Amino acid sequence: MIILVINAGSSSVKFTLFDMSDDKKVLATGLIERIGIDGTSMKYSNWKGEKSQGPVAVKNPKEAVQVISERLVDPKYGVIGALSEIKAVGHRIVHGGEKVNKPVRVTEEVKQILKDCFSMSPLHNPHNLAGIEACETVFKGVPNVGVFDTAFHSSMPPRTFLYGIPYELYTQDQIRRYGFHGTSHAYVSRAAARFDGRPIESLKIITAHLGNGASITAVKGGQSYDTSMGLTPLEGVVMGTRSGDLDPAVIFHIMKIKGLSYQDVDNLLNKKSGVLGLAGIGSSDLRDVEEAANKGNAQCAQALDLYAYRVRKYIGAYLAALGGLDILVFTAGAGENSSTLRAAILEGMDGLGFKLDKAKNDVRSSEIRVISAADSPYKIMVVPTNEELAIAEFTGEVLGG
Image 1 (cartoon, rainbow, N blue to C red):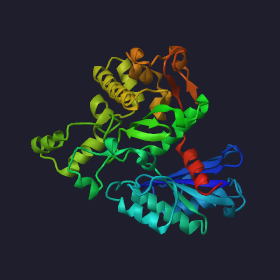
Image 2 (image 1 turned 90 degrees about the vertical axis):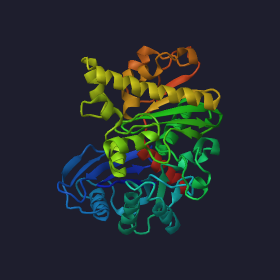
Image 3 (image 1 turned 90 degrees about the horizontal axis):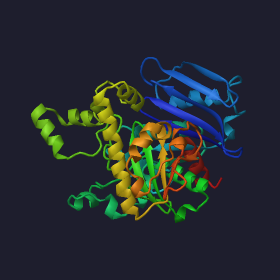
Image 4 (image 1 turned 180 degrees about the vertical axis):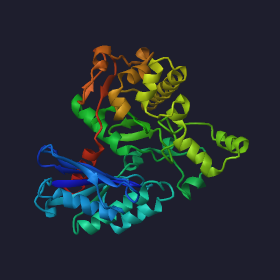
């Protein structure tokens, strides 16, 4: 089954074409960016090693999907003979609220659910829906499947998803913890269980998705039990530009002493805080902050120490919440690639059962691997995430392929 995966954002459309019948082979992948503004361009590569990059005349998601479809069957760069070879389109969708608890085939009812969640995900859901509608037009008759970031976390019990606020704010306004990065957490927890050779239903796993956005999830028996992100992706550990957890009264205090509006504070906490705000070097990239810290920048060293500590604290909390552990998983950009960060996070945790093998941790690899010591009570793994492949897998499962 050939499946196209689409991730439609505010000014970009990412795509990957998979042949799921041929060892889940990536046939083509690419990105159209700066849609609707000057400098719109397309990057494209296929399994034969052929690449192209250049400007494209695209003003909206529909036109972007049309250009993508043309490139996939292009005589020079194409990888399929006809668009009819594509049997399904899988979409990354951020928010499904409480009404979507698994990947689903997109119907008018599902599209209405996306619209109902616009207020909780204004930067993502409208563009996700635009991508779906574009594919419905370009790939007529081809089923579309929605894979929701929030769906994996729908298994959380009330004790983990409710906030300590009047209950009617949940029952009437659906204010609760939803969690995000669900597709990644689901993928890496399943991959870790397969690699370990044990059924995921028998395992307790903590997954640490550490990139510019970061979240930690406690996975019990293959289901999300608790996760660090909340109603929005702002809650949880410190991230690239997001503050993570803080006293809610900080918001009111900042508004008062700085004379800021709601929009100003929202921008401050989501786009100017986190590692960017703490390090003070104008970059939210942990690689840049780590490099500066190694050169003696004390503020950057402090930012990294705080980042690692907040992740460590969540791991400890979820160890208690799960009542034990089998596997700790590091994934995403920083989690997969920074041995220094992994070591900093686990510093001093030997007594809790986290024993890192330094030599294994220092190995750079794109493969799934165990980095814990042989006598570590808990296995520690690095599992490269692949949200596009996860979406393709879930799409195939929904359609029975």
